[in-house]
Image 1: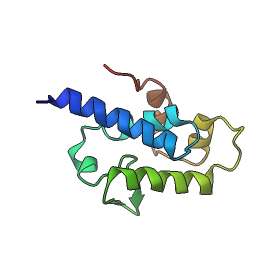
Image 2 (image 1 turned 135 degrees about the horizontal axis):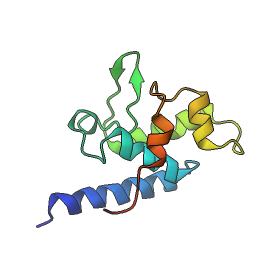
Image 3 (image 1 turned 30 degrees about the vertical axis):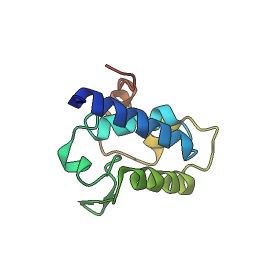
Image 4 (image 1 turned 180 degrees about the vertical axis):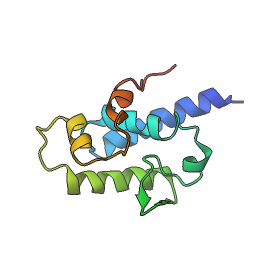
Length: 116
C-alpha cells in the first residue's frame, strides 16, 4: 500500500512529465507555479477543482475535469501570452501581472520542485 507522501511524489512527477510532454516552455518554472499555487499539490480547494495554476474567471476559480486539462489550458494560455521566447519567464510573469502579490516571484524562486 502506498502512503500519501509516495502518492503525492508520483503525482508531482506525473505533472512535471506532462508539462514537458505538452511542450510548455520553461517547465521548471511552471512546475514551481504548480507547487506554489497548490501548496505542494495538497490544497483541497484547488485540487478538487483540478486547477493546478489557480486560474480564475473573474473571482471564481476555474474547474477542470482532470489535472491534465489544467496543464493543457496553461499551454494554450502560454501560447496566447508568451510571445517572446527570449524574455525571462519570471520577468514575463511580472509584466503580465500573473499574481497580485508583489512577492510572487521571490517566493516562486524559492520553491523546490525536487523530492523532499
